Image (tube, rainbow, N blue to C red; front, side):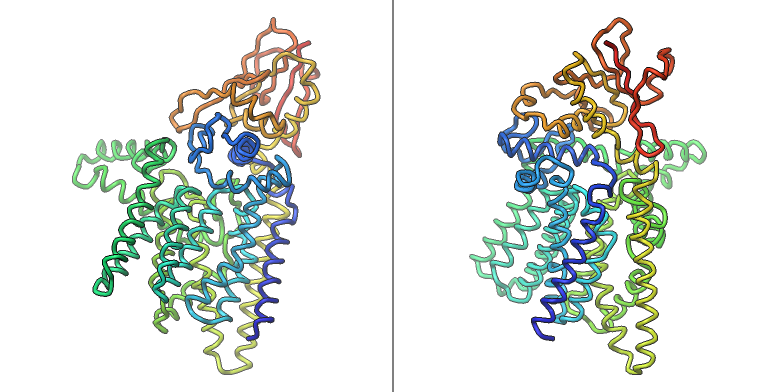
Length: 538
């Protein structure tokens, strides 16, 4: 296959991916959520002042909601915020770039793995149209860039194993270190990559010079120590709260079992934890996860919005068969990456999340591309080949179009999705900007997460001015602090009947029992859903 054809195919696939990122870019997802606004505003603050929203100079963790977000997304977004401004598009544009870049990156990885251009192009095409990839990369989700670094680390690891060049060894570990500054599941892959490399070097220990061994040890110590030191310096409060051993439900269930059947040997913390983690792990390998639901939270999934197609699901098994039948090089590396990916969800107590298992789509793509190529390559009868190709292509197209139809034309219109995405804040801030000089106070409900960040974001509030006011409460049981007020804004709905020149903003149920005529209330409505009620006291 000529280089011109390969280049043309890759260019076409990248254009397809870009188009799928830009269709309805300002409407799907329907709104900006609080975490996205936090990444965007901190990027804006770093651009303007070199400090995060709390005034920390070039921090290695973003304090944000006291969850100490990993910082790479905000840092790498700075040029896009500078170009496009503090907007939803500017905040999300980094992931659009990363999403499109997955196409050539998976091509390079598959080519390196199998030395087959056709398999690499199949993988690049699958990535270019994947709903799993685009659902996440259309958002400002830090797990996307984390997956990019892990995928790049995999590419350099394969290159290192094939060439034994020190430069590829260093690039592998640099990328995997960077992944730990992007999202928390990068730490799981850090452990895997170190283990894989240790086994590799142990098998070739006779060939290691003292100088190279020293470099290996220094590199491994550095990439382990740097994240640990930073975690110690800041906080892992939010991550610790999500760990499976902090599951209150598990403790209650264990207590219930022991009450019903007092057999500690069978019902104890260890056995229940193993069962809990195993169940969550296996849920992510089920047809329901892949084909029906994906993520069951409304931000990342919807019923019948499959994260892969039925054809891809079936070709996972076919691909695995051919990988081992042909004794494909690096087959175990591919399988290990596939098996490690679900651990990010399994080790938490929450429902499985598409973003915590995001990287799994890439080993799946490698396996499916390998299976598709060898399945059709082994059919010698041309008529049978044509029939099977049309059947597979037709089934794949049907499933893919259905997934994209659900995501583009149904998902963003559902009320539960609008609520989950915290819609209404942009309209609320627009109202506030128009009436800012008319009132002394704006009293705003804090029932839905972190309202302050939307005001900072949509008002493009001067970071230097806000840094002097920023004060967050102690973290709650879920690991989040709260901003109670800044400027004219109080984020605790409390009605004062004698107050004047005040605006009260709440959800409809916040006004229950206040005896305020509904005719005097302004409403922010998204589709059929009344989001905010606004009551003005002059």
